[in-house]
Length: 291
Image (cartoon, rainbow, N blue to C red; front, side, top):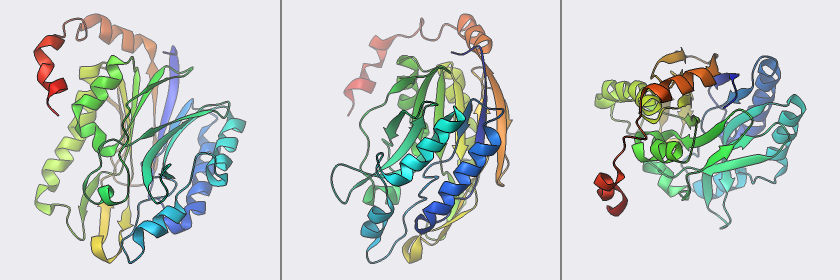
């Protein structure tokens, strides 16, 4: 990991998928503003395309609004990031190799314009009707350190962050749209419990896996059409150090949080706690065998 780096999270409310060019311009504006003092900028889940909407031709409409990595829309932001020589993580709906099917994708853009992508593995509720789940959990080498990606619901499964840590991740980035509740569902009676979980999980993931954990959550509302109604995002993006200390946290409003990540703190925690030396994989066989 780099001795010292500055990371920022941009928490905002994405425009609908029909206005994705507005989202693109917002990304470019924020990258322009933050590139001077940052090495890494992170945007929330589906930050470029937002979520789908219900309707007669819902899948088809969303497919048309989705993009491919080599497409003009994605390449425009990649080329802009290249001019700023910075790392950026963002989310978008990506057309899969099977026409009519999409991935919920996290894209890691390198300063030289190259990129890596991750497809969300765990799909909750309505997402199963629109996205194809990913199958690979990978760690990517960068000049900042070894970075692992995950998306929203993935962080509620400890196996994801642990797999990334075992593969050598030093920084785990989770982009999300964790919801308070929704016009058609959302478990209003579980809001307090869900908020508690959302505040604790990044802390536990960071501490138990000895990594920096960056969560970029959306805020504001999303209209999912007549079937889903209006949903509201939780906000409260956060950056957590390997000790489980929240070193930067947003509130529920749009904004930017920033924190300094240091190799010294990572090494200090790992030298004090031997979690990976003291593991006993033979006792956890049920995790691997229980499908």
